[in-house]
Length: 233
Image 1: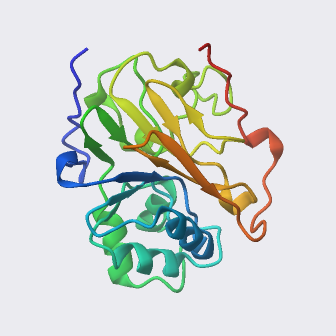
Image 2 (image 1 turned 120 degrees about the vertical axis):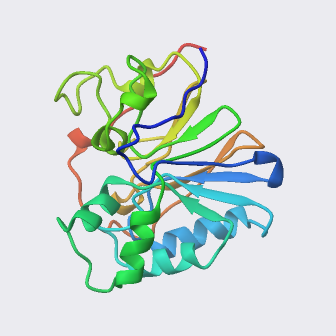
């Protein structure tokens, strides 16, 4: 299948394409949700140099104790990038607010692309439904996709367990009991704000790196934490 990463022209901003050859190492980081202390621990493990790229799957903000601190940290590094998550969108739309964020912070959130790509990889917050062309996905779908069942948020099949084709999609949004890694999808939201780990994927080394939070910041029902399917080897 020919990779098509062109989004509906009504969605803006849409897509940032990166030349992977310009970066020594590339790391993809799961949902941070305002947990700056945990992010600092993870970055200490990764130890990215200025010529290494760190890409976030969105939901940098909300629920955790220091959304402003997370944004300040990410924005201070020119080699850090993020796609937009559904929690960024809630702030942009005015459905939620965080008193410590400035107008400049909100403008930054609105500037975040919906997808970042390189090689045969796409990073998006929610997910991609392989049953229809990529450019027919709506903003809401890209930020919130989980189940392939209409209105079946936590009902299998999940898009990432069923994805049969390239590009390989790195995603967050769906809180997982452990990372999901397959040939065509990699899920990295392991629920650090809910007492799970903050997980990163080392693209060059093809390995996962994770750290534990110091505490559980927000409780979450076990029926909204997905146990990923075990894939056949």
